[in-house]
Image 1 (tube, helix red, strand yellow):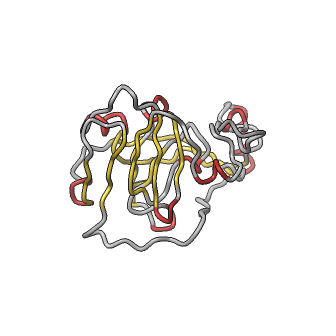
Image 2 (cartoon, one colour):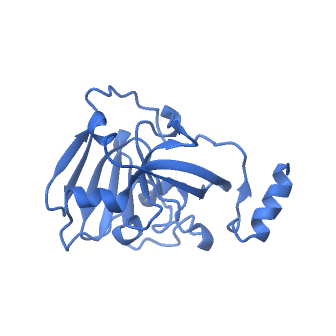
Length: 202
């Protein structure tokens, strides 16, 4: 069994470790604000904006939707990466078929507990490894990692995967989310080291 340093070198040689990142064998907890406590009898996920039909799902209803598993790597803007994590949830591309999108929908704003938001291009959200996730490595998310539900957007730094998801807003024009307004890069591509914005594009 490889130690952490040997595994890190292996992943770098395989082209799986983005620049400026280091391997972690843990799952660090990072977030702004306190961990919310939900009453799952009243929790809902809603969709709004440039959609054909605004809808919402209770937790029981959401868990009835078909899920898939995705094995992939994640990269945090603070510099850690973890490899071959197994995530389970509803494929975002399938989810949008439940309510339909207007042709004007071009971006997705995730709204989460405490007023947290993050913005992502719709085109990216429709890729085949982007989920509305509620399990990782075979177990339900813990509250610290976003229970009951989070977006899971592995092509981007992990702040784009919003914990404690409550609403998805489909919008025609891009606008910055919480960390993007605070100076983080709007795109957040780990392979380009898009950690912080050089200047605002808004």
